[in-house]
Image 1 (cartoon, rainbow, N blue to C red):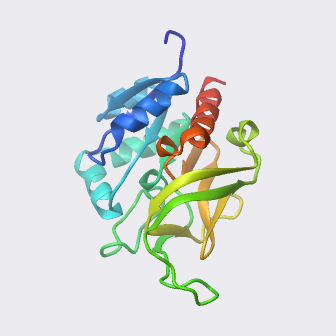
Image 2 (image 1 turned 45 degrees about the vertical axis):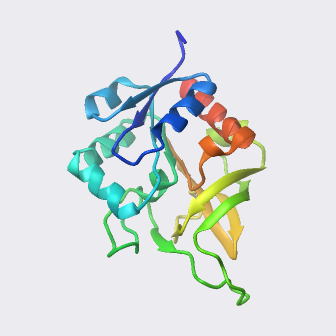
Length: 213
């Protein structure tokens, strides 16, 4: 794919890399799975994927000395796309397993879904399955996406207290929660676009177009 943007997918031991790489390639980019800072610097953009526990992911990033590499990449201005844990790790901490520390780049905290919704009905946690996301704001990614689409979620924790100006995607599970964050060169989502069929491809198409532009 000569001339296609090169997107680094960071391998820090969190898994799910092959499906993310294939999804990125289907959107017309070159996917480069890498595990070191030098490879990140050679790419046009980066994706931080993730499945599993916040604490384990944060520990792996620190152990491989990739936490500062991610901070440096974001500071460089190159586009960043966070998927699931790749969104949660942008925040300072999580209440999962003793409040492990994240990257601390955005306002807000990662908290477990409550067992009951505001109306008293019981919530099944984790939140698993398809759910609609409503988009709002003026980030360049959103110019290429529908106002509402449906994506696949698997998570027990959600972001609370995010800056309202940065919370560009909202979903409902018991009550409204932040499903996506955007600030300048950062775009991150709680769902899994690589598992979200047509809607996921639309989002990754928008990311590839944003990187190219």
